[in-house]
Length: 242
Image (cartoon, rainbow, N blue to C red; front, top):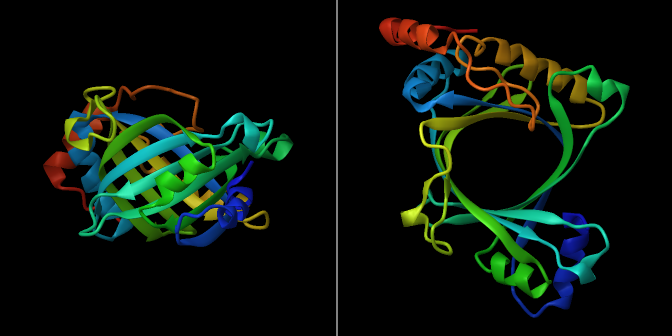
């Protein structure tokens, strides 16, 4: 069951949970990893490339999976709580399947369907009532850059932390100490995904000395040139502009 169908179920519950649906047909995404010791150099590079200030990131992510009565196909939704806000704000996100076929194989980014919506703090209780179960939860801490460069692109750099106790964000510990995840995403449609994918790929080339970005699930590890590239960036303070 996708998120749009789940939202149809809301009227059958007695819980007040305000949602503002924002449907993105598709999104283009690539991921990679970088050693924490090189993150400052990456930030300098991104600052020069993007021309905008970074935004601090502290997201409590709760992954929920549907119960058997919601359909034969398992459904997964993510509740994202932005802890950087004075009043924590909630978003519910459903990531669909990846595009398949010859066209998908020929591009270097993953293209997938995605639906997300702003929601109230009652969302978790609502999804429990609908039969969803907690699968896992994470705390992402880092920063992001949002900018337009051939497409509306978001770059996030964050450490992934697991909870030792339910919802205990203050006690979260790194899943992979010394390593942070880098993700580049851009919204697209069936008509624009090729153009957006090209813009994302072109941008990622500028990050190649520090890290390699690829489709999610295809891990290439850290790049051997990262240390030298980071040292160069730290010595000249960036200054790269597209």
